[in-house]
Length: 373
Image 1 (cartoon, rainbow, N blue to C red):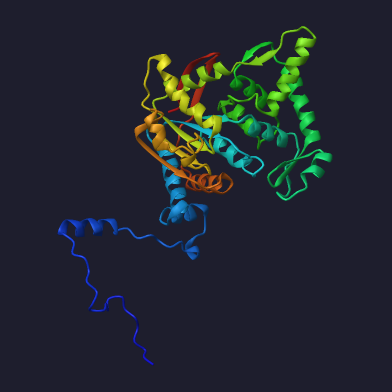
Image 2 (cartoon, rainbow, N blue to C red):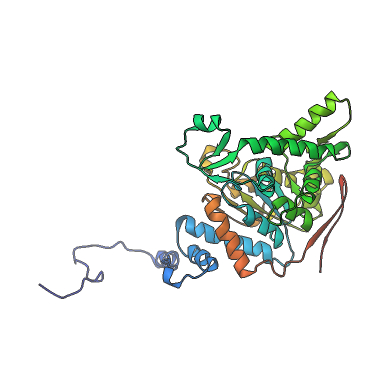
């Protein structure tokens, strides 16, 4: 027996090590110069601490840290980029309603592009209805008999969906007839909501525009279709959604901004709509150069070729993200990654000194975009 400790410096003499040039040695030292730091849970007390530790680790933990760094740069840039938030996926069912609401409340975004489903489920909860804990192994035939709809491991009450669809249609009845952008309609809808934790209500109160270019593809669209059907039956004018006006309005926000930044949660239509608003700036005779900052949280993979998983580098080839942009992606499901990044920014108070953005509309024109000083 021996108490001698093993040492990696005691190498067998028969091993022949490769010979490197001095240039190669210097390059090797540089590449190996920054060690991966172990996550020390004994030293972590806050979300901010955890995300900072992630940034010094590896794999998707490091990417979460990088995304947080990019977001902080967006929020603290002296030129105050206009931050466009794109949200898709089952975010309300996942429990992220107040996280998104807080991003609006605390000045962390300036405009939102959302699927209709997210906004409808925000409205569903604003009416006092709940998402219930379910199971992905549920008997879906039995759920159908009970009029319970399943969103992976979450349940909603279809009977209440029906009632809310009809309520949306009745709300549309009260609006003056004519064409509305989704922003206009959702602003009016948000003003009618009495719930401090509502995304729609908070955005309306704070003057943050919400666009839903695929609003038809949601239960809000079903409610407006109910309104449209009754208007035809009763031979009276009604309101309709003008999706091209959405294009025109969001593009004006982009061209009137000194610079822009994008936060993509999942992908889909909201991601492409925000990107296309940069492309469409040509109709105003401008080339904005693309977003100055961009980050994305997604589980979609780039190698399938779809937009939702496409990299931010790929977006640079289209001119949607600037060639000089600071950007990062984390391939982590948003119910896990978004609270970490937003929570870190809130604990840092990264948006505390960010001046407010005011938009003045004379629809379809954006008359003025001004920054409080």
